[in-house]
Length: 481
Image 1 (cartoon, rainbow, N blue to C red):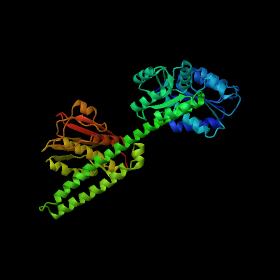
Image 2 (spheres, rainbow, N blue to C red):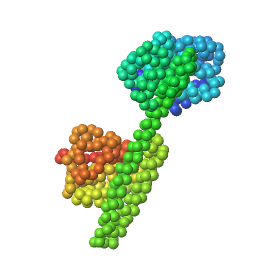
Image 3 (cartoon, one colour):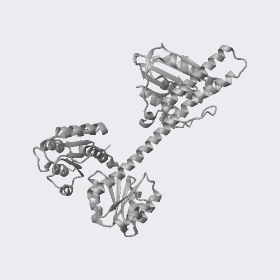
């Protein structure tokens, strides 16, 4: 968390300040202060200038018609984006004054650009930029421009120093490199860095005279700056690189979410498929009655329906992209739902001669997502079966209070170590404890249960019994239908 987490808007137009405020809050959720005069801005800034990571400033205010507000904010050390509709001051003069960016209100797409810049200035605080140039004045000029946009800047005057900075500062994500320097050259350095860093870990921008742009790009640079260049061109290219790196990071995160949901699908399909397999084997026996055969066939049909519903939920594109799932709350009897799931799971228990004991409090109707809460029941009881010894016992208990419904699943296994219990609900957590009949572990079951219970507004936790066995407790808020 950065100490500066607020945005300051200094604008006398209520229309512009309101549009900016609403767009920034909607897009990022940042806290935004608005001042319509220089006097109001002074009151906000003087108390704590470090609370703002960016100020958006109009040049013409009722009590400051010559850009005094911009001067004041720059002098206060706040990165300043000038957003104005006047042409009283040249942009060159404003850049020399020390502003971070400049946008004229008549520029096409000006408002979306300013909103984007707010997010960029915030994200830049986590990005390091390495400037490699043998000329001190060039390094100093680039450093000043980038620091005004909240980048962390590191400097090197030769290849050796560049490698040293990269070794010492893992935050470096962008390298700006000149070609001519002592002890090597920029094009060779670019090629070497391209071999050592993936495209989504480090972006390289070459800079030199125009004749070297193609060699830089062929060596692996993603962009090129022709010397001499202006501040705006430099900042546009650097920020576009930062945008690409952020996009790579988001895509990687989305891929992880996708893989997690697909893992959930594979994990939770295992239980009903296993039940269908066991049921099919049971149907092949000659000694079963027609009534029992009908019950087993009905159970197979029920499991197939559950699998289809589960797939529809887990493979929903919006759920994969957002990382959360919508709840489908319907009236349901808790104990009845649990009993139904136990009928499905009893085949697995029978395979190990494990007895499922139930002790239910009074049943009650509540609103719950039946499919998702079934996942919770299946995962907890399946885990209990998995880690209980053959001929063991499992207790499934329910309790009802004025506000909560509690489900407890207690096994007869050896219990969990302290290290296991500390990481139980982490995705893909594999326990050191081994299943008693070689059942597979995916490390997803308890993570799935936790996410579902919390989405329902409840809690789930682990607590050892006095005998050292594992007890999992789920508390769900009672929600009348």
